[in-house]
Image 1 (spheres, rainbow, N blue to C red):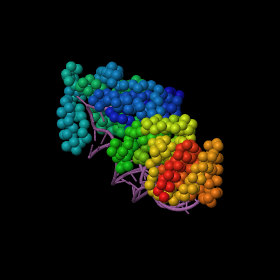
Image 2: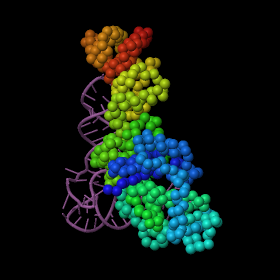
Image 3: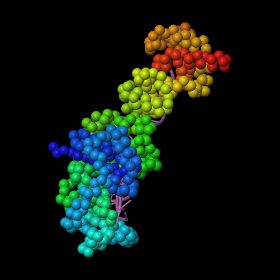
Image 4: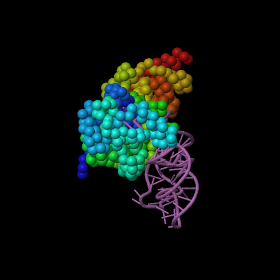
Length: 469
RNA sequence: GUCCCCGUCGUCUAGCCUGGCCAAGGACACCGGCCUUUCACGCCGGCGACACGGGUUCAAAUCCCGUCGGGGACGCCA
């Protein structure tokens, strides 16, 4: 079996958005599934638009998603020397020529064509000229055939045919001597021995041009797979105005990389009815055959649900490790060791969709100045008899071993003494301990808070009650 | 405008290649119920789609043609 080699080739003119991330993911999954090699190449031939910040952001996003590459990153801006011999080769073989038309002249011919109801394009003025000297200002154009068809056998879409007459002579080297995208990709994909080009559907119509160049150069043509685009809720291509589209934004909102990968993979790809995939499963099951050909709408709710699913199945110590830096970033003190933190986190694990939500919900475990919800106080705390709370207080104070069983027993004894149902006891206690009427199971909360804080908060609640009454 | 791609519940999709197993399955969201110490989780149920029109066939979501709709590409951007 020949070694499969894929690549992800972003242009660093902004952060990595979810569309790019999905393209990267598909390349990664395909390579990993096939035991191939995944290459990262930064397409920064456009010096104007490329920035170091974008490069850093892209690399950071890739790292966060865990899309580790085997070779690279290669920077096209540092590879200037490799392209010129190929240009000269094309000129020598008559497949490319120097063109002295100015941008203004080309614009004019495009305008004329458009006005005449024709496709705007280069009209071939310099095709037959032999008097354009290398010294004078010029670009180099690739000579495309006027007749015939060029077919792309796309792995996702099947065979697609283009009329060669539709494709005009494109510039492969600018007047400043730098090569352009459509040419550079061909050379780089050849030089990097890429066997499978997996990229966005917006490149489908570039493909015949590139295939023509492979052939003119006498080089092997790779396989192509054009993955459908991601759309916003309004059906147009996903962009900033549709909300959060950068990968890093999801990290900041408390999403798990595995959940983002899972969501992005399932947007356009499927494996029967399965919805939840670990990274290992994604690698095991991924196939280009099961990538659909229609564009998909980005659905934040489903991503959120998937994040919840991944969060829910995260082992407690790993969950603790995830939230620890988030808690520290808020300058909150953690009143316990890692085991305590893990225990605390598990009580909230099925109650939060993101890490951030979980930390928000952990407020009363980590802060002592509770924000009392007035309505909860009115409804549950004020109606409670002080003697019941103080009975519970002393029962808890008497516990020898602070564990779940003892806590449960303490509640039982108060309930029996006062002929109460748990609901009548739990709600006032919940408000006293958490400040609100919503929390994990009351025994868990008591256990995690610890005796000192439980007693202190009960005392405080008792003061409120007796002070007010 | 020209060329190319796409079209199954609101959304992601299974099914389409190899027509009958589909009075179209799963998931998110939404609505109801159950469970229950609150909130969640979980469980059960509900709502909801083959874009349209022709053809081929005993039979079409599946094959063919057309229409309409959406998207993409037409750069000295990538």
